Amino acid sequence: MADSDVAVLVLPSGAPNPGLLTLIREDLRCVFGRDPAARNVFEVLVTYPGLHALMAHRVAHRLWHGGWRFAARFLAFLARAVTNVDIHPGARIGRRFFIDHGAGVVIGETAEIGDDVTLYHGVTLGGTTWNAGKRHPTLEDGVVVGAGAKILGAIRIGAGARVGANSVVVREVPAGRTVVGIPGRIVGERSARLRAAAGMPIDLDHHLIPDPVGKAVGCLMDRIEALEAEVRSLRGLAPAAKEEGCLACAAGELCCEEHHLGGLS
Image (tube, rainbow, N blue to C red; front, side):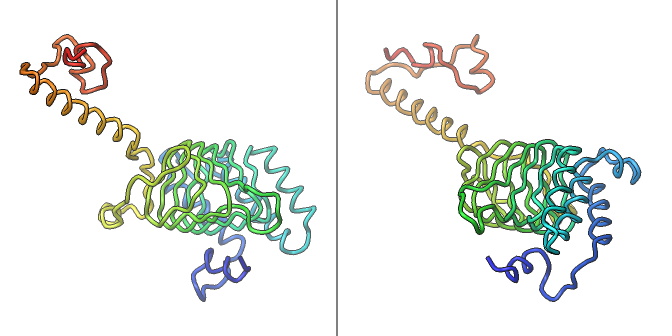
């Protein structure tokens, strides 16, 4: 991807390149909109490692593109030692970027991150090849990545998408969709209209994610129950009743007791 293409991702077309202090002020202000634990500016400036790592990266990135490669890498190394956040100085990061908690985040050299992106602890934006060139992911505007998720390779995560905690994403994700699992699978679509009505341009409810495995198991259980009822009908038997003492049945959960087999053995 050419540098001109990357610039379009990070900044709106025709927008002036913001200064370093402007970017840092925006990074600081966005914390209060995404972390209810943030109480005041002084506390955030002193105690938030994600913000410290991002401030260091802003400087290191300028050094990197100014030809001061060793100075940039050394600054990134110091920031990692202090914050436990590893951001390569070559990574391109947009405006109002927020790393919650910060611990264990890794962002590779050719990663590209748009505006208003949120990462939780343990996230990796990693590469899948030793070849030079684009090898890390691109996150478009408004993406939210849950704790421990791994996004690997030169793939694109569309604007407003959510990545569930501990997911491993190796394929592109369309805008506004949710991906969970290992490997990551698309499981739902978010409603931008509902978010806008609630005054939430960024959806941080990354815990409200469908469970595709649970849904599949539920469908299988429904099918088994229908087949059991059909077999009992063919044998002239009365419909099987759930045992009153089964707590799993009462809670609507899966149960492996014999009475679930309907006496068909």
